[in-house]
Amino acid sequence: MGKLKYDHTAEPIQIEDVTLAHLKVVIATKLRRQESFMMTWRPIDQGEGGRLTAWIHPSVPLVFVFDSPDAPAIDSKRLEEMIHATNATGELVLDHLVKTLD
Image (tube, rainbow, N blue to C red; front, side):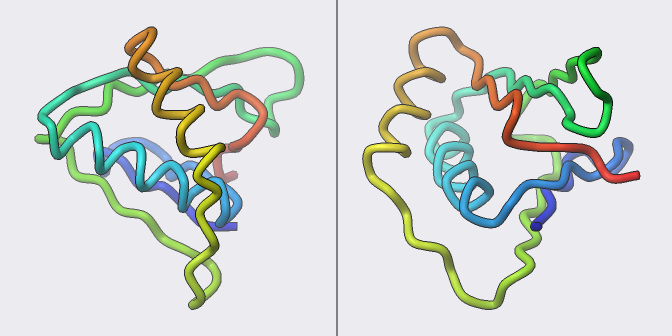
């Protein structure tokens, strides 16, 4: 499990390495174009309730921490679906893919 550290004021988000690798490409693509967006997920460790949303913006510090030293393979179809979803709505919804750290 890797971690996405965003804004140094919130708890890191725990994300398995393959999803984190795809997320890194999506976020880098959007921010390189100076396109901010919302990212929403439902932490697994909060049971059925709760959703978190972060405004992803180029000026906010962002760190990707991978558990494995080897870079995961990127699935171009999965990546395309994530980018399309983000472009279509202005929001990337991850729900079941991530959880916050205790």
